Image 1: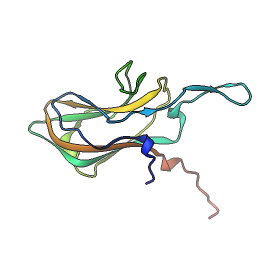
Image 2: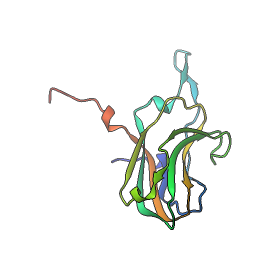
Image 3: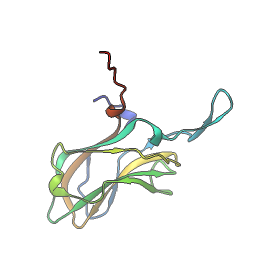
Length: 152
């Protein structure tokens, strides 16, 4: 898999924390959401209409002294720190840590409707403290959208 470092949200980021919300270590700047094309037409730049997915992989198993869950949420915000006018666009729902073992992969398609400049992830830890766990998260091309060539 080829990655663009500018599109990485978390690289072996620890998600060991008390029950709370942990923000990804880096947001992605989507730039201007609108632009004018060469013909003077207003163009909406909505990454949700592209052939890109959100990819998350557990790099260190998640553990807890209790029955912790984690909800991986794709968010957008008005600021780089992902704290102003935050909106959740996509969510995995609460996942039990028993399934968050090394190598576990989660892939979410990006929904249309991006209206804010910055996007990122938040890891919502609930029920109990996580005592270990690292995550990698990035935007990747959607390989299912690759055109096929039936003549080959």
